[in-house]
Each structure stands twice: as C-alpha cells, then as structure tokens.
Image 1 (cartoon, one colour):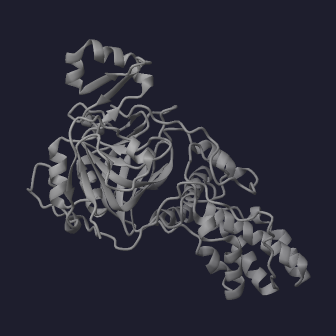
Image 2: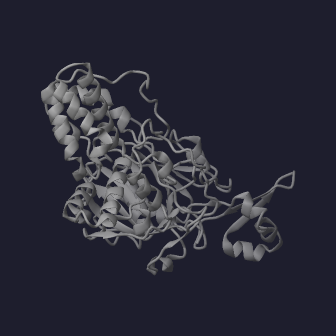
Image 3: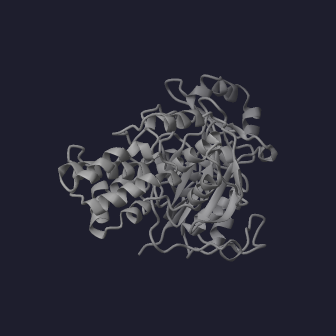
Length: 475
C-alpha cells in the first residue's frame, strides 16, 4: 500500500483524496515548487527533539493510536424512516405494566412522566389485552424512545445547534420496541438509550440530590441532560470536544480526558460560535489566510496593501490584482498570521475550525468570548502535532520538521478524528467538579421554556437557522 505523503510548498496538488472544501480552506499562492516526503509510521515526539517537541505523548498522556474505526459525526441530513409506517406492536398486560413503571420513574432522567400519558396507559392495562393496549403501549414507548434517544427539546429551541444526531438511524425506534417486547426487559431497553458520556451520569446524580423545591436548579440540570441527548449516544473512542461557555477543549480517549486546552470562542451576536459535529481531516502547519472580500474591499485592506508595501510586508500580506481590477489578499505564514502556526482542517459550511493565534496573551483572560467565531486554542502547536500523530498522518520527526520549517504544509490524516463543539451551562469541569458556566450566548432560555411547554411531536432533525460563514479568524 502506498503510504500517505506530506505536501510541502504552496500551490501544490495534495496527494490525498480530500474534499474540495478542504482544499479551499487555505489556498496558497504558487510561489515554490512542490516537494513530497514519504511519511514513516506515526510515533510521539521525544522531549528535547526541538523547541516544539512535546515529549512522549502516548506515555505521558495515556493516549493510544486507535486501530478500530472511530465514530464519524453525521455531515449531512440522513434519510429518516418513512413517517407513514405505523409503529404499533402487540403489547400484553405484563409488558405494559413494566412500561408504566418506567414512565412513572422517568423523572430520574430529567423527563416529565405526564408527557407519556400514564393515565391512558393505566386504563388500557385495566381493560386488558387488545388493540387499545397495543396503541397506548406503542405510543408511550415511541415517545419515550424519541425523547431519551434524541432529546425532548424541539429544534426551534436549540439555538445555533447544527449537529444532526445519527441515533435515529443507528437505533431505529421500531427495532428498539421489538427488542423490549421480545426480551421482556422494557426498562433495560429504554436505559440502553442513555448517553454514554460520564457527564450525563454526573448530571443525573446531581438531579437526584437536588430538592424538588429548587425548581430553578432542577430545570438547569434537566436542560443540560437533554443537551447530551442532542449528540450521538456514542461519541467515539478518540475525539476532541469543546464546551464553548467553559472556554476549554478536551482531547478525550475512551471517555477519559488526556489533555485540556484553554480556548477563545466567538463573541456574542453574529460571531457567536455555532454548535457542530465535524471531522478533522488534516492538520495545516504554518497556514496562510485568504482574506475575504468583505475585508479586502469592504474595509479597504486591498487598497492599503497595494499603497503601502512596507506595512503589508511586515504584516505578511500579499496582494494580486486581476485584469478586472479584483484584488486578492493572502496573509502568508509567519508571526503575524491571524491563524498562528496551525489550524485543524475540518471542512464545514460555517468555516469554523480550531487554530492558533498570535495574541496568546488573551488566554490569560477569564472571559474569552472574543473571536469572530472560530476557536483559538492555547498550546496549539502541541495539539496539532498530537492530532497528526494520532491520525497517522506524520511521524514524530516530521511533525517537528514541518512545524519548524515556516512553510505552509498540509498533513492529511489517515484516521480522522471527530470534533464536537458543544454548549453546556452545567457539567463537570476539567477538574471533575460539577459547576455552572455562564450562558454567554443566552441559549438557555428557550431550552428551559421548552421543558415547561407541552411535548412536541414530529420534531425536525436539522436546524433551519441561517448558516453564517465566519469571515475573519484573527485576534
């Protein structure tokens, strides 16, 4: 098998089958010829190998290179099951009694028993086996599955939530109900739908310990339990997850945090960071930044670059003018580049990605909602090298070499890594303590309101909100 290649230089053809959107993220001027280098087997860098050496990553941080395929976030909107197909199966009194008990205890999962019409099910049980029991049992079970698997909050209340949950396709409702009836373990089958992330269990314990009289606290816990259901039940063995209001990024292996990084996120308003589930397809060392026309033309940057070449050179800007007068500006790799020394290539319609920044002093601030939407990470070069190595895109020697070269270098990874950009206002922090986080984008109110409103059926799986592509990542 031909090994993957690192692609050096600018304006080169990537030796990997990347989506066009990935290639378009960092267009590079055609200034230097391409040279290719074979990549050796991935291995962590050793301490002291260079100024950017990060030590024995695998041993020091408990990482491993996962050999099995990891869970991939859903990119598009998968086809839903035919809604016209009736999901009514045959229930008996014994199974319906177990379902009723599960409904009566569903408050422990932050859901409201009344949503599932326990009185109607109780009456159908009293009337005995028959079509009425089949209908009542099936209806209540389907609603429970939908809420436990997908979340109770309707999409309209999930502001800037663009994650498409894969679970309805991976765990079809009809199959779950058939399994419950066949096994007789109704409660256990429903429990198998709970999110597997440890934070969900921690929130459930917190809910159990919170007095019923403290409705505000209980509602906040319930809202954040439901947010876990909006994601896929299984996030994968190895992934990156960032909680925007916490200003933290976690590198997670087997649901254990092996590394954390402070973050800077989008400022409130149109630059607020949206919630996404994307995939890291590569790492860009020493990136370029193609300046959008809203800045080149709208803010006069193109004219300034052309009229003041000394200033432009110091800022790393290069401008070209087309025959039609169109000015293009690309900021070259270097200490002033708005993306810093790396970015994680994770193509998406929002143009959101994780990257470095030259303004690293901002990580010392407590409130860090400062960017134009992208997520800046501290110790970004360490993160980039780690992802490249774990993704088997480069060896320890090569990540050190390319990061120090100063040249634009895109390193596609063999093993892609999921990235989850989430929004939790309550959960365990990086030290394992349960705490609340500031609602910096005011996204709690619609979720909390939905918990008090009647249950919504036939909920949409994809957001209809506007996709706002981020135009400038800089500090």
